[in-house]
Image (cartoon, rainbow, N blue to C red; front, side):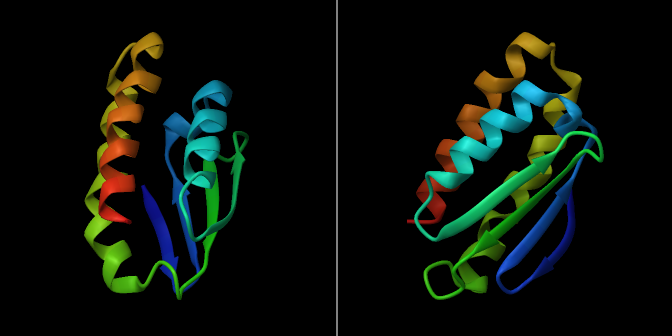
Length: 99
């Protein structure tokens, strides 16, 4: 799911991001995290660009969260009506890591 990861920016790409409802949910949840400056999904390209404040979210902290982004790919195997609920669990874990 992580296509590129440089200080201040993470680009995600996954077929699950083509689902407009899911992508919108993910963007809104990411924007609730302190230090996230911007999150923009592009359902046409199945991508999401996340920009963050590197001082509030240092690379060492973000690296601990990378397995959670990989788990997002597994959500594609779930029925559409279960994806957002399962993503909510992952987002709670992400919020706990990034505190």
